[in-house]
Image (cartoon, rainbow, N blue to C red; front, side, top):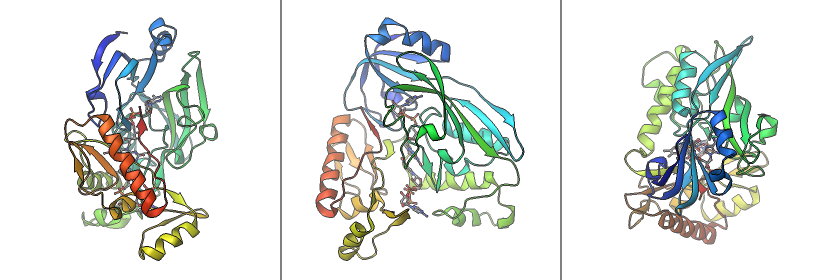
Length: 340
Ligand code: FAD
Ligand code: NAP
């Protein structure tokens, strides 16, 4: 394990914010992580855990230790009737892991294709897209206690998953470092989820009979839609959706409908979910740019760094948007991105 000093972590966050960490270390095994937790440099410093940095806004330098989780490895752990449990270590790239499950003809993650970042961060906010969340297939999360170094296995209930939420983002925030995830995935024949958004429209373009659509086809369709709709972090700094979609009371939504007939919403139990991107666009922020910080021209929920924006500038823009949406709609948008 090699500790680097005064290291730029620009390449470790997809907003491409040029922040520095006093110390930086890459961890490639659970044993190494335990060794680190017992070290003076770990115990005497503030810590920041880094996966792919695609859900993170660095508003300052790290006055301490940045720990990049790079524990690799994945395998089919157990074969069951109709399903299989696949175990995958935290440092694996999420999308590459999804492709691995497709190669094994295992269903459940295809709608979550092309989400950036690492496997270890996926349970943090219960990643979700196109009507599916990681909690739908999650079997267990293994994590190391960030103080004692003890390894613990959480079952699905213990993870307390919610909409873009988990216990690791709330009650146990900063207390555990995720090292491995287990997922229970379905063997053939598969039940496809194609009703969300433009998936079916994209699938139809191939001309293939819908009865012959496969999980690999769904993955390709989702990837293609995402490529055309979302900015590529390799070209422009971004952490995807900056705010969560608010879930509000029906009475509150009726008030919005009175002033904005046709406002979009989706049922969420007794409540309704309103797309945050719509609220931001209606408030006039889409495509706005202030220096190098801006709101993407095609997607109002996506804040971007055009080059040299600081994290503080992006955060200032986010707070202006939040205040404006509150004054126009009475809704407080909550950041989805982790702010450091
Ligand atoms: P990081 O940004 O590195 O970390 C996120 C948080 O988790 C930080 O607080 C970090 O300290 C902590 N953390 C990281 N690894 C660990 C670990 N092993 N143990 C404990 N804590 C850890 N998200 C969705 O849910 N759905 C989407 O469809 C989606 N689309 C996106 C599209 C784009 C273009 C971008 C840029 C982002 C998108 N995201 C989406 C957000 C992001 O990709 C996911 O949240 C992803 O899971 C973050 O992974 P990461 O490794 O980059 O996390
Ligand atoms: P979209 O399809 O344009 O839809 C806009 C919003 O409306 C989405 O946020 C989505 O909520 C909601 N929505 C649309 N159809 C829905 C349905 N049938 N049922 C319930 N809710 C519906 O969204 P998009 O921006 O192109 O993103 C597509 C998917 O990828 C979404 O699931 C989105 O969450 C995910 N995504 C996430 C991020 C991120 O950083 N978190 C970034 C890009 C895309 P949900 O978000 O709850 O699905």
